[in-house]
Length: 192
Image (cartoon, rainbow, N blue to C red; front, side, top):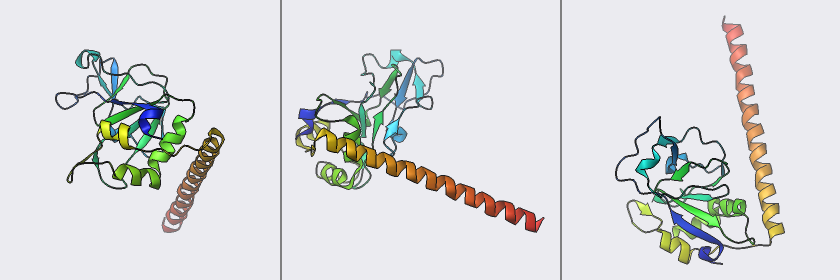
């Protein structure tokens, strides 16, 4: 199915210049650099604070919005994440597209996993324009991107599998850190 039939595609806010932090500000800005491929963004305290006066009526992010980097793209460098925060004062910059799922046929988590997959990257590569700095236009994204849509049961199975793999990777990373700590301690003891 076309993305436009599954999700509303909205632009992030286009600032007139560089985004400058205002630590007294009441709004947080999510930028492309804040999106990682791990798939989820629940903590927002690290985002850039600004005054809401700067943004007028910018679209505020909602829990379960899918966020996709829209600029500077090369094949295989696409990143999407799921906004999981309950914060009601976060907006996205124009370097991010906001995809708000509008059907019960697709889970937002599934869309994130698809967009971050090799198949998703291949599909996105087909609609990127610009040879030096790639741009993923909102119109082409909405109109031309086909999303394979398995059953909800299959989507949930895929999400569970991906979550399990991510947890295993976290355990392996912790084991790696612990092993290195053991080596460091032994080295310290025998060289002291």
